[in-house]
Every structure is written in C-alpha cells, then in structure tokens.
Length: 155
Image 1 (cartoon, helix red, strand yellow):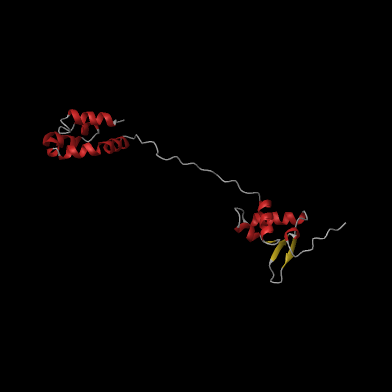
Image 2 (cartoon, helix red, strand yellow):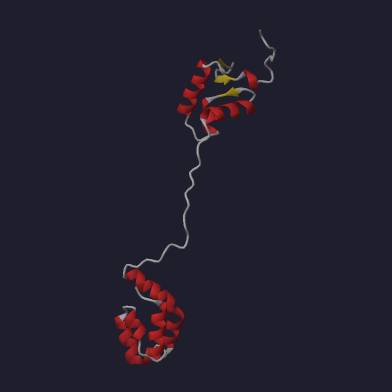
C-alpha cells in the first residue's frame, strides 16, 4: 500500500519531482521515464504532481486492490410495524367508527388481506360489526367510536 508521505519524500529527493521517483513508486512507469528524461516536463508536471499527489496515491492504492475505508457509515434502522389491531382501532377512532380494509392498508404497512383477516377476527370477538352502506360498501363499524350511536348502558 502506497503512503502519501513516502510519495512526497520521493518527490522531494527526485529534485522536486523532476526525476520522477514518486511516479515509479506509484506504478506509473511510462510517465516516470518521461519525467526522468524531460525534467518533469520542464517542471510543469512536477508542480502538477505536488498538488495532486494525494489523489494519485489513492488511485494507485485502488489499482493495487487497496480500497479506502468508506467515509460514511450507513445505519439501517428498521421501524417496527404498529400492531394491526392498534392501527385499526386508531383509524376507527378518526373515522367515526367506520373502517374498511382498504383504509387500513392505505394508512399502515399492512396489506388489504391482513387487514381483512384482522377485521373479521374483531367481528368474531364482538369488537365491531360488519355493515353494508346504502352504496353497497362493506364497512366494519365500531360503535364505541361512532358519535351518532347511542351510548346508553344495558344491564
């Protein structure tokens, strides 16, 4: 693995890059020879190398199979699903007690089929009722959340 400080040291000892020792070190043999025979392209190439040597070292390390450590660390946080029953009850509370499986699926991470099964389960447990509106839409009715339903107690 090539080191930046070694490349700069070789650049310095090769007459401020004129002899191209740093290019040989980085595996750039053809341009190293060109630098050696032309005095670093009349020192213009040597000045260029002075400012770009850090990226040239990184490039040489990449070519040799040494990859730089990633600059950012990705953190994957998986959000836990809200329990389906809670999603349904919260939606029923905001919808005056009327809920459809499509509404549940649209407002949560659950599918329509999962919502349908859970709503049917709530009907079996007498938590809600299955009703058909005049328009033909099947809704699940939660009387506790319906402001128009009677809240009288029966003994």
